[in-house]
Each structure stands twice: as structure tokens, then as C-alpha cells.
Length: 524
Ligand SMILES: Nc1ncnc2c1ncn2[C@@H]1O[C@H](COP(=O)(O)OP(=O)(O)OP(=O)(O)O)[C@@H](O)[C@H]1O
Ligand SMILES: [Mg+2]
Image 1 (cartoon, rainbow, N blue to C red):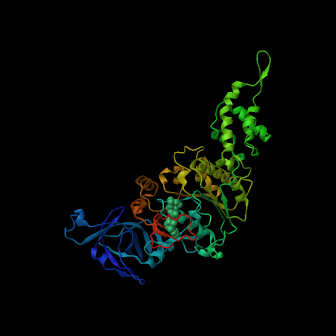
Image 2: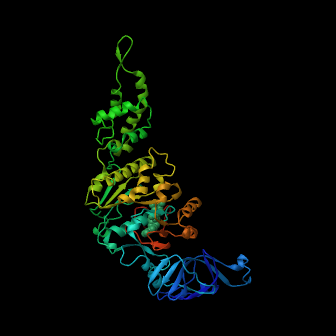
Image 3: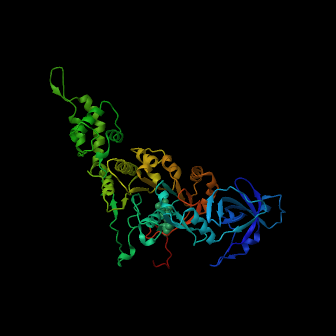
């Protein structure tokens, strides 16, 4: 049921203000499913314009003029003012909603609430019913209004998920991916063909069971579907053979002209080729010895053959670093392995999701993610092969390893490259972080769709305000008051920016907030 909530009293280019009697907040209206209060903060309003056109807006601020010393009203007035951001125009005959405003309402026009039927119709006309749609969740107030995204844009043009710790980021990612991959959820509509391979950098080891069928076994265990591959840190292979010479010298922190020629020659000898960048595997531990072997003997003034002690002195540093790398267990997946898990997964037509359970320190994670991004890039940019499937790379806790001021062993070169050029090759990013202002700006600035949970850090709020389009800026103030699982969705994949209760993740990622004190009466 639509009801009148007030009338327009001030209009400018950015917003309109309406005045309503405060008693609308004490007289709930029925919507057929129970009583609810209309005209509240964040709710939608409609203002008839002419013919069948109606301006649609959202209340983003409410004030009591008496407290603001508003001269228009007497101090004792019971009046409340709502500021409204107009989002578009709905034509009820053509059943068509257009973002943006061509015509403004006139002063004193009546303003109405919107019921769920009208709101669904508005959402429905932006993302056409016949288009492929992915259900993201429901309107935070009207739970029968489904909010969809266009998955071809959501996964086709990079997406970011922001929010404080515990606000629901991991659950949102699990929920969205479950909507895509678990048919039993029926959230992906109007498509039978999906060509999406997903790789999750699971830096908190949360996702291993999110695709499991909980009902499959009675003893509490679950079965991971055969299209999901979960790889532990110990099993991961990202062989050093895929590092080129320049990258290796960066890692070894070696640029001395007294060392580089010997290092280059040693690698060529071990690879048995003249091309130092050839992707031939050799045992990395043997490199230390080989570098020393490459130094020619010299003769002293008496003609005695002896070691070139001077050059050997220069090589000490690189030899020590090679040994450190080959002996460091945390780097075994690179310096102690021959194959490439990413390439294997991408070439395996039976697997759709690769979950990399990598609970390791940030510096190691940044190196692994560099190698992962490089592998994806090499695989997809290999022109000889026709890869039809798109790749979605999920970067959980991205601030930990693709930071804006990268000081790790290696830089953000490949992840930035995927952010800038990946779309051309069918590679897309889903970036999740609690500190958006600390993640590589190249990556964040390329994200066309945002799912933003509660954020309280002032710097991050300011950062998001600067990242998004002008029209959405005044929504940022809402972010501090969102509850767990609620989010503001913005950007191209969505009909328009709206507040959503994200669909339940089931199974949940393994990330529940641990209880410190349990009540004595609680037997669980
Ligand atoms: N979509 C959802 N479905 C079900 N439960 C949810 C959902 N979103 C949030 N929750 C609840 O909120 C809790 C915290 O969510 P989650 O672990 O996703 O937060 P987070 O933002 O990833 O936190 P962190 O930054 O610490 O990783 C979950 O354990 C779950 O109980
Ligand atoms: Mg999380």
C-alpha cells in the first residue's frame, strides 16, 4: 500500500526536501504482510510528475527544523524534514525505469511511500527479466524485494568487497559464489551456460568447505564436490622455473655487475641452454654451487693456478641468499617444486573452483600472489591457445599482500596488470579488504562494482567517498550504521545503489567470531 508521506518544499539540483508531519512515524501503515512505518531514513519515495512518470528518490537525511532554528517554521512545530536524493524516473505505462532525472517535481507536489511491488517493478526494469541475473540478496527493509546483479558485469569488470572485520565480507563472497556454482540455490537465472573458473586466495583458510553438500552425509562430515579442488600450502606448486632472470635478481636483491654475469651463466648451465629465461626446471639448491663454479681460475705472477678470491668475495651474498631460499620451508612451493598448480587447474576441464588455503605471513603471501597472478596472465595471454572460460581471481584480505606501498620481496606488477588489462583476456578480480585505502590503487580504481559493508575508519570512509560516483557520495554516511550481513551495493552491476541484506551463505565460511566467555547455563 502506497501512502502520502509529505510534500515538496525545497528543490535544488542535487536534492529535494520534503516536509511531513511527525505523526507519520507514530502511525504505521499496513503492507498486507503486517504494519510498518513509512518515511523512515533510507526508505524509497515516489513523486508523481506528469502522465505516468514518477520521480523515485531515497531519504538520506532527516531533521527537525525546530532544533535547527529553521526560520520557516515556528519553534513549537511538530514538523520533520526529509532530504531526498532522486535516483531516476519510473514510467508505469511503459514499465520502464531510467536512472537520472530529466524533470524535477514542482514545489508542493505530494510525496508518497513505495511498496514492495513498485520497488520490485523498478528493479525489474533496470535489469531486464530475460537477462542473466544473480540474486545478491534482498532490500534491507522489504525482504520480499529481491536485489539482483548482472553477473556478466559483476564478474566481468572487477568487483570489490569492503567492510570492517566481522562485517560479513567472507560470507558475502561465499554467498555470491554459492549463488553461481550451487544450482540448488536457484539464484542464477536465465542461463544454462556458465564459463567461469574461480581461484580463491584463501588467506585465512576459511573457504575449503563452502561448496560442500552438508546433507550428503549423516555423521556431520560433508563431501566436497569433484569440481572443487582445495590445495594446501604444502601441496602448492609455483615453480621458480616461471620466474625470469630479472625477477630472480629482484628476489635475490642482487644487481652487482661483479655478480650478475656469473649468476646468469650458472642458470644457463643448469638449464642447459643459452636463454636464461627459458622455462626449464633445475634444482634451485644447486645454483649456489654452480655460481661459484662459473668463476674462472686465475694465475698468480708465478703462473700458479688459483681461485679468484676477489670475485668469490663478491659472490658470497648471492650464494647465501640462494641457500636461504632453498632451505626456507615457507618458500618450498617456489624453490622446491617443479610444477605449477595454477596452470594445472586452468588446463583441467573437470575443475571449476580452486581454493588455495594459504595461511602464511604477508611477505610470503605477496610473493605467492605475484606468482599466481603471473601464471594466470601467462596462461590467458598465450595466443596459441583458445581459452573460452573466464577466470575469477578472489583476493581475500587483499591489503595484506597487494598493499599500496608494497615493501615486500616483489611488487604488485602482475596484479596491477590483471586489474588494468585482465578484462581483455577474460580475467577478473574480486577483491576483499577491511582497509581499502591500503590496497594497490590501480586495483581498487579498476573495480566497477562495490559491495560495501559497515566501515568505521575515517580514512577508509573518505577513501570510498573519493572512489565512487558523485551521485552516490551522500550514501557513504550510511556505512557506519550497517549491521552484519548488510551492505551498500554500488556500481555498474547493480540497478542502482541500494542497501541490501546479503543472501545467507550456506555452508558458512569457517570464520565465526570465537566466544570468549560462555554463560554457565549454556550447555553448547
Ligand atoms: N551472508 C551471510 N550469511 C550468513 N551469515 C553471515 C553473512 N554475513 C555475515 N554473517 C555472519 O557474520 C559473521 C562474520 O562474517 P565474516 O566472517 O564474513 O566477516 P568478515 O568481514 O569476513 O570478517 P574478517 O575481516 O574478520 O574476515 C559470520 O560468521 C556470520 O555469522
Ligand atoms: Mg573474512
